[in-house]
Image (cartoon, rainbow, N blue to C red; front, top):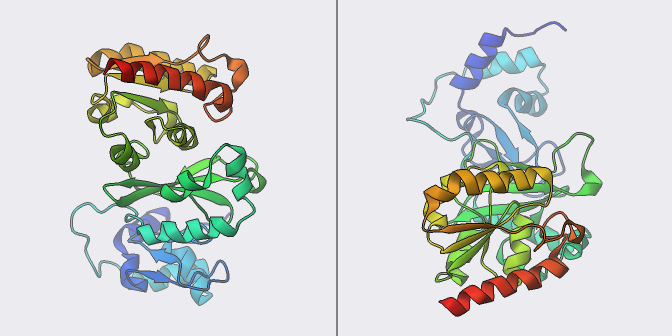
Length: 306
């Protein structure tokens, strides 16, 4: 393959051209689908469509909008180099406006894919209050901290998942600011002595729906839970509800051995066999019918000690 533009020149262009100078700091009509309202958000170094989930760089967008070849798009964008210097470090993507998450939620109301969530034990109330939505191929799970959306996790529906594609992905360049869903737990379980920590958002939703205080790790069981020390040490007991597979249980054991002593006086307890037989299901969602009543018993005992 012939390289049209030297790699160093291409890297320099992407670093020195602010796309908000080229197309404005806002949303435009998306060229990748039939847009009714502007849904393609322009960021400093890339663009993202909140309707069709397309992410692209400036050269790709210029090619499509202006029918340029790759070299023409590169040459056209070079005239914008250095026109607005960034002040300090800027995130690769700005926080999502909460109204965008409501747009996805409204789409979910009319989507047949709603049944997939219902089959996983989730009811309307928990879905609405947590702003779960539908993009057209994935469920959107906004991570909200202090009433502000900092990132959005997406779960691709099995019917739309391509070979080799990850089930989950999130918005480029945005760090997760808290465990999920921190605002909800602060509102409804402010004085709780205990917390159930799960690998995934849907597992936490199942427990929250049952009236149990639960938060999930943004990056799953591989997360360093000490990152969330300030949150976890507010509780006397934190139950680890990690998946009942090798990866999940290794992560739970590692968390207790390495993080446990640094979280004292908070006690970490791993919920696993025999309390949670693997035959019930690999994760909280799959095992919910048998597991949730037993978890509630443990939580109720802690409440009685309060």
